[in-house]
Image 1 (cartoon, rainbow, N blue to C red):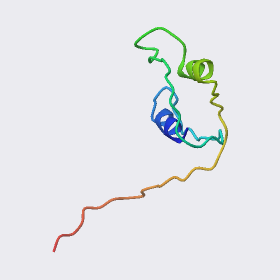
Image 2 (spheres, one colour; image 1 turned 135 degrees about the horizontal axis):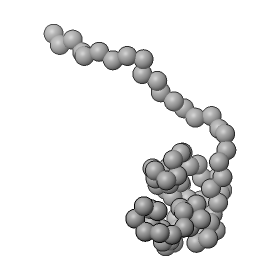
Image 3 (cartoon, rainbow, N blue to C red; image 1 turned 60 degrees about the vertical axis):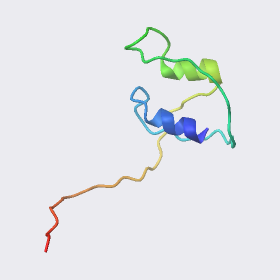
Length: 78
């Protein structure tokens, strides 16, 4: 489930960080079918995950680590 959450986090249609809160550990072997809406008409990624895998993506507010870079300079080579 952690690997699925990571993969979904990288998907532009999801558009945010996905965290595994299923409590399920271990490896799972599953197949699901989904295509980006701009390629093939069909259900959204959220609908496909719920209908085919029985999982639900719920938006929540949570703290997230953010790194802010205030400035950058070229290193001085001596």
